[in-house]
Length: 491
Image 1 (cartoon, rainbow, N blue to C red):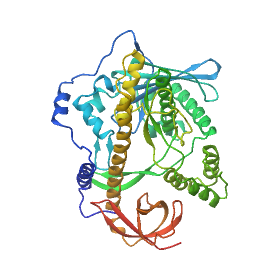
Image 2: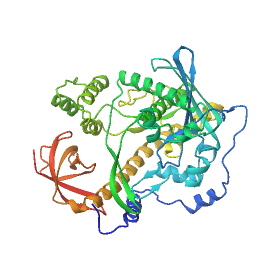
Image 3: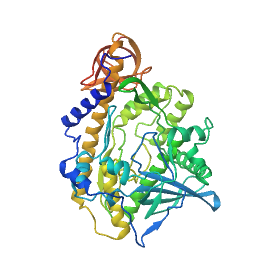
Image 4: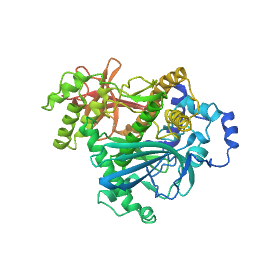
């Protein structure tokens, strides 16, 4: 599957830049931001009685193979009573990116790094996000530490947040760590080079699994969707590679969920406002009930996360291969998350999908602006400093971040479809099995089951709803616009 033009990467970069500009996002840093960047020559080295020295702990990062903006390190300590103390170190980005600076202004505008098939448009200059504010291997860095004591049943028994100096002793990748943990591969060499890291990772894995099990008992939803990324051969797209969840990703996901909850409660306990990440009750619960009924299960008429999780668990056990399609349908029916400001004394809306009430974003300040905002609030609370934002500013920031996140998602989605269109260009006329992923006045969308590609059903879409299986024919693609159009040809 090839197009006539082999400069796929350059084409996708151009499409991405145009799409960003069309949605009001900035693909380039201003001259003021670049001038400011030139004056930053070294990482921040924070000293003082409030800053602990934790450099000798066996910290390690686990991220994608090609990740350079490392936001977190993790380490664990066994405690009596089968408890585990978990430490999550979050890069202290605020130490170099000051509120109101020109670099901060760019981050405030875009609010997130934008990851497209052609290139990455970082929220912060790579000199910072991939170097001076990144928790890079064998480099000393300032960090915000989220400490959690996890009981044998996975519950949180205690927590704290403080500042420290840390050092990354091993840069690890999800796939190789997961392969080892799942006994499908050997121990990564980077692990063997650090005394005690092998057992520490096993301890982290056990703690993460306990935390995950407890969250799902409380109604957190088990989703497993198909995520595809283009595979390049030089500058030519060769294929779409499906990324799957694994044990190493579980470690980071569960630790970050726990850390984000601790951060939200820490701010609340110190009478500080916060920006919360919320997912309200599903917008189309009635359709989720219908989907469950089609699978032989009954859900209550009103939204119930525990009942939904029990249904998802049963379906995953019954049909592992088909579960990602069901997951995708339920995710689409739940609706998008959003950011809201919460003042001291307010009652949080909560995150329906995670079954948690207190939840913020705090663990990726190199990549998301909300996390940088939360970091500034946390540092003020730790140090007893004045609030860095007024309540009105936080409310405006929450709305702005929600809006720009949606714009960034649309850019990423458009470029993904442009990449897919390149691969499908010579398959026009072929038929595929598909699942409906969107159905509204603005259009009906479906994802192919054999190729991880989503497109619009432009003919024969009447009566289709989210979660329906159908058969479609590819009738056209538009690489520049990221359009992939199908026609329904079967039941």
